[in-house]
Amino acid sequence: MPETRADFFNSIQSKFPFGLGSDNHSAVHPRIFSAMEKINFGMAPSYGSDPVTSEAIRIFRSHFGEQTEVHFCFNGTAANVLAIQPFVSSHHSVVCTDVAHINVDECGAPEKLLGIKLIPVRSVQGKLTPELIAPVLIRRGDQHFSQVKVVSITQPTELGTMYSEKEFQEIVAFCKKNDLWLHIDGARFVNVAARTSNPADENLLRKFSDGADSLSFGGTKNGLLFGEAVLFLSERARAKSRDFAFTRKQFLQLPSKTRYIAAQFIEFLGTDLWRDIATTSCQRALELRKGLEERKNLGISLTQPTQSNAVFAIFERSLEKRLRQFAFFYIWDEATREARLMTTWSTTSSDIQRTLTAAESGLTQ
Image (cartoon, rainbow, N blue to C red; front, side):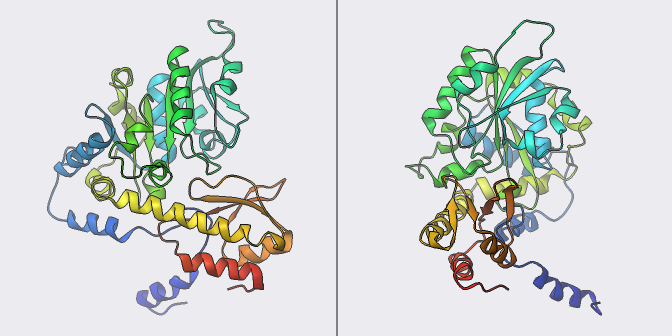
């Protein structure tokens, strides 16, 4: 046992080795910590009625449109549930992919808290298309059948792929034609910046959300300590979400000291930090993929395109064990042993090289 608190903090560093488990595992970006420290003084009104929160909202609107409604909450599951809530009643259903976070990793929160039914559709590379959604739009108006009301997509997807602008607009058009609300789970939404042909485009984030009704905008997976934002983008969504403030309170997601969430987003979105983080995390994933491709003779099969900050692969079992000892990662599919390796803003090229060396040599930490 450490003798002093200082001994504990010194000793704990060895408990947090390099890993590829999740961008949730990474440390907070130093500039984000610094932003919170800069507003950590005096007294400020609570519950979002402070000037720091107002400035963060202004910055969000500069990216997504001047009429965008911006609401902060604590975590991603809540952001997804709250971003869907205004559009549904308990007799409605939400179409999503079979691998969507709301379907797989949120412990039934949408169903429990909203009383709705999820309709998971077997996806292609983690994505929905109008052709995949159309077959579930059946028995509309039939009182015996849950009525499809929302389409929820993830950008980037849970498989590390991305909707192109064309693919996204095809879904937008389909939803409008069929009177469906469109929600985007954007836990890693800024990664579109790193994978577009024109990363200098000032309207990039709006381009990949234009036509959607709501967006769960992620912070935690992108270097923030905590905090997400629920955005209502369309005019009809803003009209539908007029009671959102009450809902957020009832769902236990109204932050008292909102300025500390807001300060993080001011630094993140009010500067080029979001581009830097997105570019770095995606570039490291590409470096990892390239290195694994060059070592396929070791028993490596890459299973998904690498378009965001995730690499999916199946390893020969002894190699899998060796690599997981060196840099922990999750097995995405227990049946096939497909693994997911995630890079973050803090992943370095030397981290990637050490991982690849470990794969070749069998070295472990």
